[in-house]
Length: 202
Image (cartoon, rainbow, N blue to C red):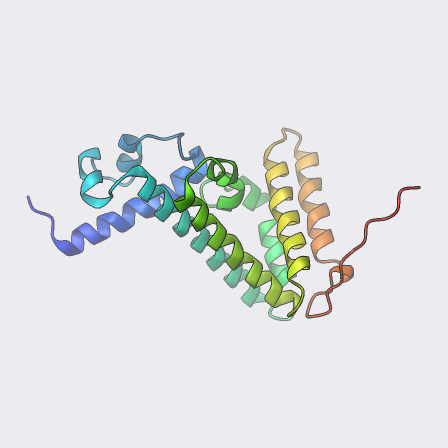
């Protein structure tokens, strides 16, 4: 039975959505095409009718994963327009988000995998991270791009570390400490950011 153009487009979208979740959960090399297509309710035989290669799907699924998190950031920020960074950090650095492997941040889930990918996938990650930095800079104020990098690095690192340990108390401390750091008055939300200088070693 021939698939209509509309159905083919819907199938393609479903595969990309499914892959964006399964890659975050299993890694780019942690799931084969057969299982990936089955997860989308399709057969492996239809894959090459939709995509030129797995690399193409990796890039498209990564872009979708990054977009989905940006959408969640925007929704969180909208709940507290007077303090968007705090709203986003509370969501991002929560135990719930830490446990969300399939729907969580792709930079944390796939960052190490991306470092071993080709230019196409790295370009997608780069664009996504620049988008996140633009959002954070918007909350901090123009001219505070360096502070935005510190905030994003802190958030990503804390989430990664929270997932890498067995001790739930330690995992929670990583998240809570990072949240307190990125929302402190020293970071200077709402356009008054200032670089926090580390204390001199005694």
